[in-house]
Length: 359
Ligand SMILES: *Cc1c(COP(=O)(O)O)cnc(C)c1O
Image 1 (tube, protein in one colour):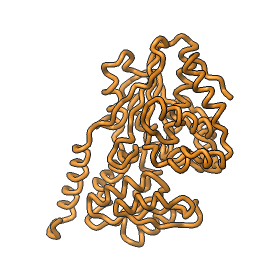
Image 2 (image 1 turned 60 degrees about the vertical axis):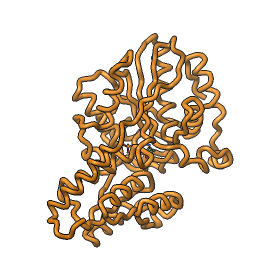
Image 3 (image 1 turned 180 degrees about the vertical axis):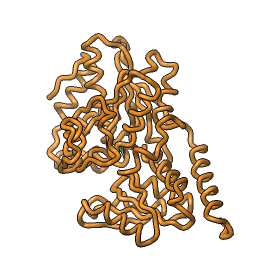
Image 4 (image 1 turned 90 degrees about the horizontal axis):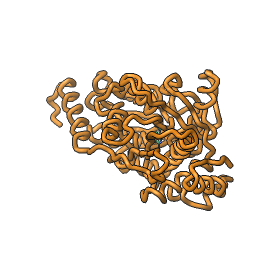
């Protein structure tokens, strides 16, 4: 990168780099989940684990960086800072390196290890804090002090992505459904971490005037479900054990008014459904994908009971290999106090009967 460039010229170069990265990447697959064909209900999973950084956060990081560039918040040499304990920081580190910018992830000291290693792999740095509730303020402080930019996923996720289309996740999904028997699904099922994915899909459904309803699945310990059911955005919760989804506070980027229905999913159900999905799809999926599957199965059982045909779409959010030592390890699962057996049995019975009996 030449030092002779003006900020405006550097930004034009940087935007071209981000666009070229997208151009090198192909669309993510839409898999068909093997359900008994006689039900007349099809389940599709959009595989967001195949992005270059392994999760749907690749889309978010690209959007947040483009938004920062086009707002003139990110210039040559700007340090990028994020408050994140997970996949977002990994994807943002990837884009920071693409643009030759320093990247710092502020995260709770409790979480780390493998995550820090991955962020380091992409050229970023981890800044650890003892109190998890201080990550937002600490990220803002670091950005202010270094003249950097706080990407702030939990505020900007809902607005950094173009909800009208422009190859967002919703447009891509509907384009891939075009030749299917029921190209307008009855339901789209997603979890919420930032809430950005559900906001993009919810707006797109309305804009395109589709009858499809949006269901958000939420794990134990999350503030989103109680906030949606009571209308009170000030509720707080203990925090989620399903990585990527469920938050201890209602993040600004979660927009409950776009959500038609929420399903609270027990953690043991998420993990049982994750393993069930991995076995049936022949690809290893993560914990939040299990949460999605449990919610989708509940909706499909209702459709089957009502004699309703149609389709349901959900996401493979990230690659399950990240969880080999946690959700896939029986001793780790047992140490959480989770008994998967009743949920695994319920999923097995569902495939035979079309009904889901809650343990
Ligand atoms: C972030 C994340 C989600 C939720 O996506 P949002 O758009 O942030 O709501 C789901 N699963 C995983 C693994 C994630 O990292």
